[in-house]
Image 1 (cartoon, rainbow, N blue to C red):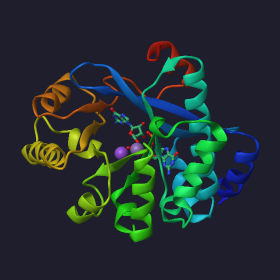
Image 2 (image 1 turned 180 degrees about the vertical axis):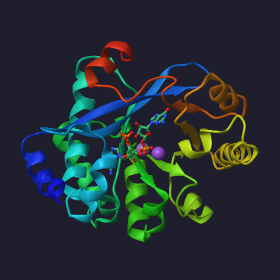
Image 3 (image 1 turned 90 degrees about the vertical axis):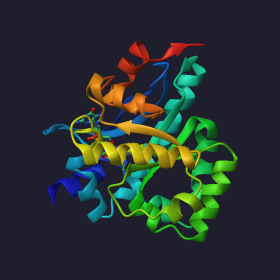
Image 4 (image 1 turned 30 degrees about the vertical axis):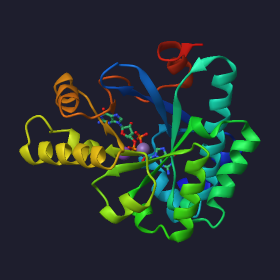
Length: 254
Ligand code: G
Ligand code: G
Ligand code: MN
Ligand code: NA
C-alpha cells in the first residue's frame, strides 16, 4: 500500500531506471539486441526489481504511467546510442496489457518514435501470451501496421501462459522467447527438453526467430545450439547491465 503511493512520486523524482540485458546470436556470438528491464532505485529499500513493484503498480492503476515512462526512456536511449555510433541492434521493451489493449496503441508507439527520434527498426515490443489472448481485430491491425514500418514483436514467456496456435498464426510476431522455466532443466529433464525442441521446431515452421531465456550454463547453450535455437539471453552471457557497463563491454563502435 505504501509502495503504491510511493510509485507516484518515484516517477516524479526520476527513481525509475533501466538495465539492459544482451541477447546473443548462438552461432556467431554477436550481440543482436538488448532487453530493457525496469528497476526502481528506492530511496530506503535500495534497488527494487519489477517483481517487487509491477504487480502493485498493476493493481493500483500505476502500470500505464510506468510503462509509458519505460517506452519513452528506451526510445531516447536508442537514439542516443545511435548518435554516439554505438551498435546495439534492437532494444526490446516489455509491454503491459493496457498498452497493447489501448485503442491508440499504434498511434502511441508512432508518437513516441516521432518524439524521441528512435527508429522503428530499433524497437522490439515484447508481450506475453496473456496479452495476446486478449488481442482483438484492432490490436491485430495495429501490430500489422507497426510491423510494416519495421517494429518487431516478440512473444515473451512462451509456453507459460494461455497460448493458442491460432494467435501465433494470425498475429504477426517475429520471435518466440522460450521461458527460463523450460530452459532451467533442459539438459536433464526429458519433458523440458522435448518442449524446448518442439518450440524451436514450431518457430522454424512458422518462420519465427527463437530466443531462449535464462541460459546459465554452457551445456544449456550447447543443447539449444544443437537444436537450432537462434539466440540466447542469460547469466552465462550477461546479467541485466547498467547502460554504462553495457556500452563499455558490449556495444561496438560504428
Ligand atoms: O528484471 P527482472 O529480471 O527482475 O524482470 C522480472 C520481470 O519483470 C521480467 O520477466 C519482465 O517481464 C518484467 N519486466 C521487466 N521490465 C518491465 C517493464 O518495463 N514493464 C513491464 N510491464 N514488465 C517488466
Ligand atoms: O521479461 P522477462 O520476465 O523474461 O525478463 C527476464 C527476467 O529473467 C529478468 O528478471 C532477468 O533478470 C531474469 N534473468 C535473465 N537471465 C537470467 C538467467 O540466466 N537466470 C535467471 N535465474 N534469471 C535471469
Ligand atoms: Mn521480457
Ligand atoms: Na520472459
